[in-house]
Image (cartoon, rainbow, N blue to C red; front, side):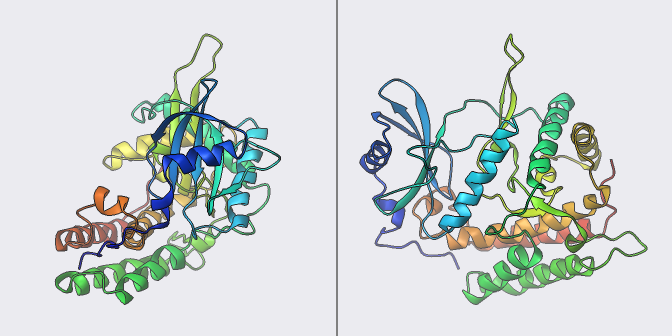
Length: 346
């Protein structure tokens, strides 16, 4: 069945009006001139705000109940470490001695505005450049662990979302058993490689070295600016909201697309840049399809859990229908096949 939106519309974000946004900024000494533009973000609410002096900032209001204060501050600390290491990441400003602020029951932060466009991932020089900076992110990330943020694993991204969807009867009866069978089979295949690497070379999530990651390094979270006459430009990384502990390959695989040949060439370019700054354990390439499968399962549960937020039914009207779950079954079967194939090699 399709989840039913809350008829009252009283989602916490419903009270986040433009006046509340401007008042929140004023509470930390930033005064907007009234121009606000909502930026693409479903998990949180993010606005580009023009200030009275013409400068622009980005105000991020965190989804209530998603992260604890300690977990948000770990994200901010990680961003600060990256910037201190001259990695082009965009982190929150320190205002009145803090990066996290409270106003009208919302936690929020303010970051400098940075323009840019999506990187051209069919350009191998661009991929190599991104690979270099990912290695630098991971060098900082490996320096010490997260203590508050969770790890990326099959339990949190596979078993728990599957069980939650089934317990809440959100899958139509005509697709429920087919989806559950495909999901169970995929998770069994992932679990089969979760122990010690076998003589056949199987390598599971539990075998990987874990470090602090960007966590959601898809092309939309990398902004690209052309080089200027002083050689400044290139990629900068935004939105560390999903930063967590996991294997290094998590920050690489979402940048790959196309058929196997194309993905192999793209991966080669990424690793060419990456290994200029940091060694990469090639055994982790066996984790690409397990990670893709877990993201697929987790995504459906994420949509269902957010359905009471009014922007979700508007932006994902196809979610929850039999056709949606049929497509999920088809993709899971594709992933089951992919899990049995040889990993990418570069």
